[in-house]
Length: 378
Image 1 (tube, rainbow, N blue to C red):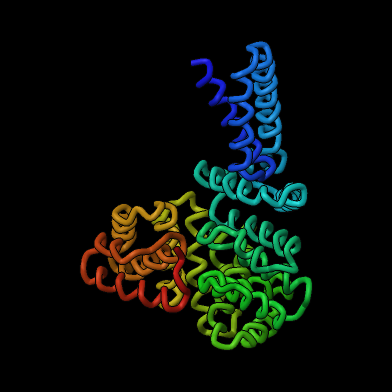
Image 2 (cartoon, one colour):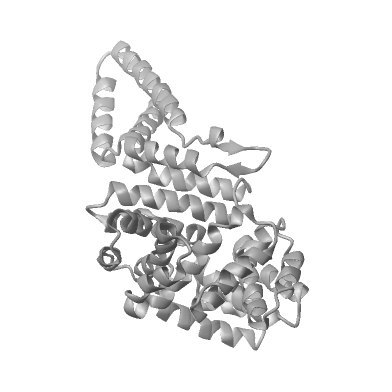
């Protein structure tokens, strides 16, 4: 029993060393097991001393691990439910520069924040921009590595967009960003990179839409992905000062590209529930107040995306929420769920069984279209 207990102790030491210092676990296992059995053959006194030292090491490592957690409490305003971006950016930069392997820990912490409603999707996306920009700076000689450190499908892929923002901000040359996008063999990351160019263009040049659209046109057949990014970023830069949808709608109207303008209206639907405490009916009423019928439809579709995301792809629940919002715009809401299934989750054809006809067949067709355009999100 004693021997078994101390063996467990050794395994715990190995685990902590691997986590903290990225040491090769196989070699450490061999080292500790050999030492363990050698000590058993010798006097008990030496075995006890070694065991005490081992326990002491564990306590020290536990303390180091605890103190190295990604702590941003001083960046968070509990009353306003707001995480200061500048404070967060500095924390991310410091913790990644101290140990590049901390990327995973940061993402795990953010998942915890989302699941506990400390931050919403928009805030998470903006914060992921910061992570991506930091990774882009750290790995500017190997941007494919920066892209691959991002977690796909988390917070609408803000990390990937952040890498592209960093490249454009640093080089001021869209051709350099395109080169960065083409470095990766992952089709999904590649397309998100092109989408990120639109984010980057607005981040760098503001709402000079003629300038930003001109940048997107240089991406050739990826232009539509890039212009979607323009729409998203233009709204992201306004959402924290949001009071009514009027300002957001006006921003969309100012975009002189039809597809980007439509996607902007869809993005308005992303934002409305987040500012109405997930009251989808109230958010839908604000969509209905939009003067233009097409804009209304895209706005409702955007709400469908957020419903799918907030329900963690519980498609039965998402279906019912759409029905309760409006039967007249049920098709648009369901289309939003399709988009959310693809964009934020690992979509499969078997998920289409949760929809009634005619939406079941449309679900299958939509998956095929999204996969051919964006690549697999899995």
